[in-house]
Image 1 (tube, rainbow, N blue to C red):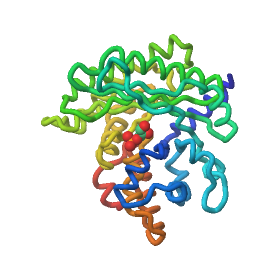
Image 2 (cartoon, rainbow, N blue to C red; image 1 turned 180 degrees about the horizontal axis):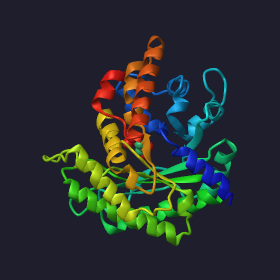
Image 3 (cartoon, helix red, strand yellow; image 1 turned 60 degrees about the horizontal axis):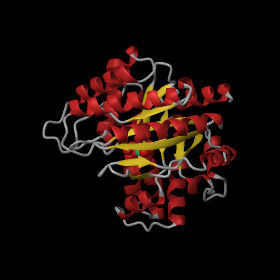
Image 4 (cartoon, rainbow, N blue to C red; image 1 turned 90 degrees about the horizontal axis):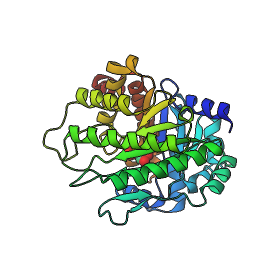
Length: 342
Ligand code: 13P
């Protein structure tokens, strides 16, 4: 195990003022996103859209790493350069989503377990050769009546830990992502309880599988009211409860924690992260930053809408969101900054 390489990768992923771009949507998820803006889900269109994002001038100032999908890590840019090379040239680390998706968990209606461990050792070796220095595996935890079950939490924690150990063997930094979904009418207190149990189970499983805490990154969901909960917790409470939950359940040895946006608006996901860093940053053992997909590039996708003439406008929208997220990671984002910079 090359611990020096992994420590350097992890530190660079969460460097001050930077965060990750999640551009690892599977072709099926891209189909949904493209359908929303009337773009046909073809390989050339997916490649063009990723090119638009990765060639946006200046993104290396705000983006430390990009999570790629299997198809993308093997593709060339429109100018003919391999995407991983194009990113590296801008000081951006290529990463790769390696999970095989969330599949129905037998005997647990409504719950899933993430698959993809079979053959993973060989795939990781290939991805390393293609330039990937970190990986992502997303587990999905749903809050609902009698959910999550312990069986679901445990099965997902086990898979996350097995994946992490395989990544570290291949000198790839694992991002463990146990996402507690925002869907539902649950309270923020219920989200806290489920998030704490999920994180504790995940790190216990990582310990059992001898995963090195110093060489992994957590991708967490925020502790937040369910999307259809009538009483939405205020922003400062989301920040405070998320930080409290992490402090209870995440080893201090981790190099960093990144967040998913999970269906929050662009502004909310930036504000919540900013408040965590502004109000609690000095009191935390890890840097907190972003690893957003939708909250970083859904507005750019809309601005592009598959049309060549919108290319520059879409890149400027994307650069703006990246700058706003960068401010949030320093605790300097607020709605005035958003307006002034727009
Ligand atoms: P969102 O920011 O859109 O939630 O996506 C992040 C991600 O990578 C989910 O796995």
